[in-house]
Image (cartoon, rainbow, N blue to C red; front, side):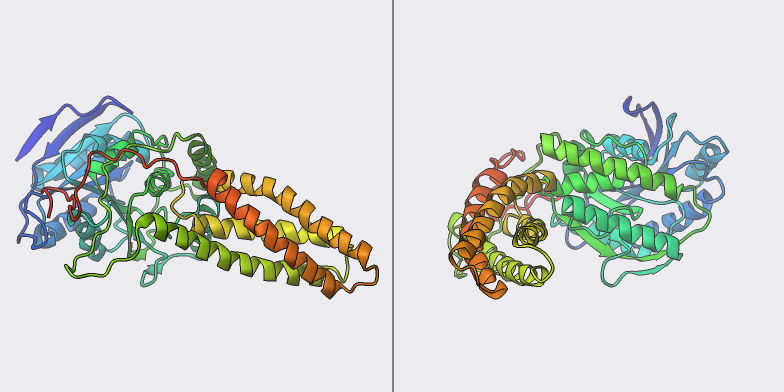
Length: 447
């Protein structure tokens, strides 16, 4: 059965022929049978690849997916017979619908179709089916249970198996490393064309996304992690299809611009959105012996982690200074040591000590930069004062004095970082108050 809906007017005109949800071959044991899934296949000039994709995907969903489902082909400004082929396949295959957009762009297609979907879970995959469909149910299941908010296929996660050329392998690993370094991302693969999300939490994120092209994937994931959503990563099998429409070099340049834009959005607060609140963890066992209250336990974690990083930094500071002092003056050796250890220390504290903070890397390192000046003056002053008192002191003795001054600098850093740089703002409103033990999941109430 099909139905016609008006589509949406932004970000581009969409003519939608939506399909009805197809029944699951067997009910899902973990969730109500009302949990619905819409899988979007964005296409641009893919008349050759589309028939094989839809027939293969349709057969797998029909035979294996334990949730009501439908497929939507999102044709974005194709100039060949892609749209005609899509309509022919929709007439042939139950549960296949078509959306036509007049603007080109993967981001436009997904934002339009996902934003208008009435499914509980939305997903997408590339038309070349490079990602093995064995990963589809593991992608959907954690969302249907309510355990996770977004799920992504990963070619870089442990257990993934890929077959692709050296050039794409190097570019992919380099790009994802850059995302982790610049945004502290915890996901490993930002651009695998195999993703799904709970519609409830996705819609607010779509209102903030701006990219119309391939950077949309990365943008969405950075926003999700920035707003505290749980992202589930599924290792997949992936085989490169050489008949691709992706301009790798051009896409890389646009991705770099997108990362810089996301940095600005996070720094100005534009990346923070209101989302449905996930309840706090609660003990399942009725006789569980619980840890101290969150406030106390949270401070204990910060202190313990900060001290451990501080000890490592202090030892590294003394060692590096001792090595550099053989060639350079005390001032230069200390300056280089402070720069290297400050960057490493700040990044470690951002990722582990203050891991729940919304402070991005720019704010973190700018704040640490100001503390760097104070720390440099304190440690340099200590070394120079010691040399004035003991002109014949060895480099090893200077290093011990430097280590003592660094301990004091560390205490000052913790206070300033915790209160001013990584200070936690009030938690954003995430849509109501969830009682202990309550779990939100698509298609049903608390489970």
